[in-house]
Image (cartoon, rainbow, N blue to C red; front, side, top):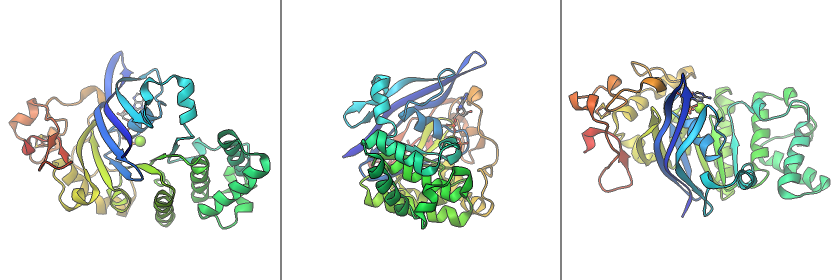
Length: 321
Ligand SMILES: Nc1ncnc2c1ncn2[C@@H]1O[C@H](COP(=O)(O)OP(=O)(O)OP(=O)(O)O)[C@@H](O)[C@H]1O
Ligand code: SF4
Ligand SMILES: [Mg+2]
């Protein structure tokens, strides 16, 4: 059974009076209670894909041009905004890299969690406080009372992210989308939070989309992975298959960068050459200017996704025709 199915998603941005394609025909399926990792260098369309599922693309300049997002027997892209609002933050929750963008600085954390619980679950003030405090313990906060009465700025980055996770879980979502949830944190805190997310995902009957530029994180967390480049899916596979035997030349390059990323904790820039900007995505295979295996044909012909070995594994590269 699948929790979410995305079909041929197309998203554009109007830039300098031109339509730039930020997401180009992306399709994937996320199984119930599974974790899908979305990886790729900066600017490849990971966040825009996630925001499209939530219908939170800034419009203008952005526009969802085509595609379907099936979730709980509905195509989210054709729902009236009012119905979409009852899904956002309730059936699908999202957490971001910087909790300060989602936490309100003028209210205590407890106040904000209680508000979410009252809104989404119709709880009374007392019920919300009791349940909220339980949630804080569940996300590993050892002094829930203190955190409850603190303002966001009084807490450390790691604590704030735990509060965000508690808020995101407050409505027991079917799907949690985590967009670089730990990138801003130091390595130990990062590891603890990832462990927490994994545990929660296991016990809560929840599916998860985990977006990151760090393949090391995906290896430890995801069941399935899609690798994106220039707005397209380049490879799609079960996590173990992808790490044991990467097929797409871009995936191979990304995997070689794991140690560098873990050492320096910065955005991926270690593959020679740079990610194309949206207004000049190369003809043919978008990766050809950087691909160690490119041949003449790659400059002209855009590769389709090839199904390899009749499995569910997909690779967008002429080498796998
Ligand atoms: N508001 C916007 N206006 C114009 N272009 C945008 C806007 N938001 C995103 N884009 C473009 O869409 C493309 C995809 O962006 P997206 O944020 O999805 O990348 P990403 O894969 O999440 O990168 P990162 O790892 O840096 O978060 C980028 O080229 C970006 O410049
Ligand atoms: S299609 Fe060509 S350029 Fe693109 S990844 Fe495959 S070999 Fe490299
Ligand atoms: Mg992003």
